[in-house]
Length: 145
Image 1 (tube, rainbow, N blue to C red):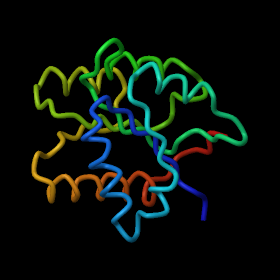
Image 2: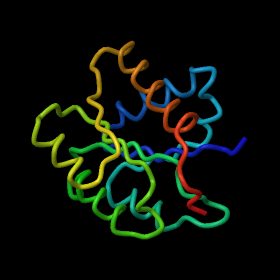
Image 3: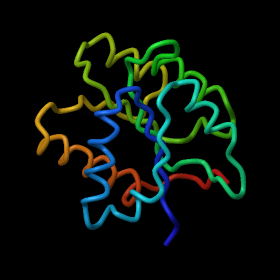
């Protein structure tokens, strides 16, 4: 089975640690945990994607925070969708915002899904497990090379 990769883009270290804890502690997702790259900013996420190659493959899914300083999630999403090598990567907006405008803007910019981060840890664990299992195990997409 192909190693599945995730790019987690979030400027909040606590949210990153929670996500990594869920992946590390989930039996069926531990393999994915070892293939998570974390970017703490939008610019860092773009740099990670631009540095991809044979020894550093593109991620199978990107979990992207919306509200980040300097380069927000929509700007990152625009850059991903504008590049031929990354435009087909599924991008899940994983954010605290439930604002209707943020949801509609995310889809208008090409988001594959929009998930509001639950504040309760057990609900967050369930959401992360569901998102990760779907996008890394169930979803099928073209080979991006």
